[in-house]
Image (tube, rainbow, N blue to C red):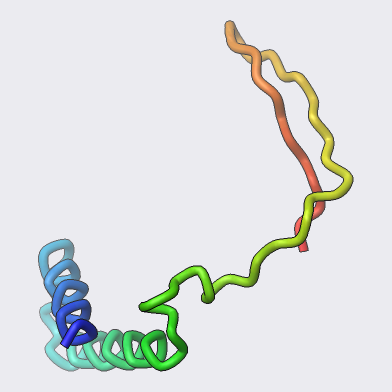
Length: 82
């Protein structure tokens, strides 16, 4: 029931933001959303969304550089991303 509700919420959002005049296109979108919700549900990502992304390792080689732009000063952080 929760998955069906999420599906309907997504579809309502799609209709409100950009109505689809082509019914075949809307059906395809509907089927893709239903399939995505089912997949995420089977894999447990709806119950525990943090499982969708692997936990990143610690940052290494972090560079911090002061930056001055106009009347603002801030720090720019850089690091390698895997």
